[in-house]
Length: 152
Image 1 (cartoon, rainbow, N blue to C red):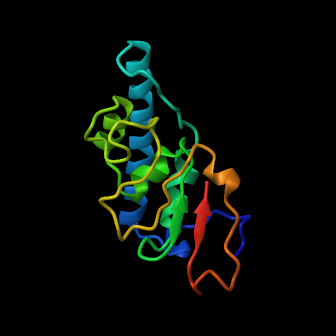
Image 2 (image 1 turned 180 degrees about the vertical axis):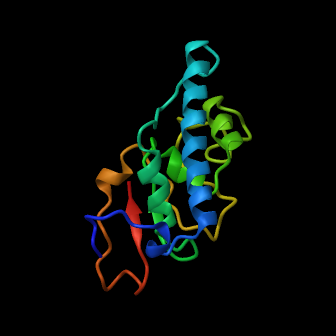
């Protein structure tokens, strides 16, 4: 592949609909991030973890995975990963406001611990704030063929 020229997304195996969805998720991540900081400055959200500037790589990394069999280990600043993996903006705000209905922790953890027991078939790890640093890739004998793990 010649990376010195502009590639059309079709050459990378992406459809027009996927490109629109990726853009929507990137824009959503930025808007949610902006709103959470505004709420924090107003004293309405006690703790906010920003993710602005990383939306493209976060969303694209999820679109490179097979969600039926691959694993993702997001870092707490990976809102784009969380949105692309299936969390809604409402889920994110429930975490920011520490509400009992927060699907990630029931409002008991800092926001951005991207996991939910309601998704037993989704491959994700319940992270700590530094899970990416502590993760070592599985050895080829432990990792099933054709599977991928991404630690952010």
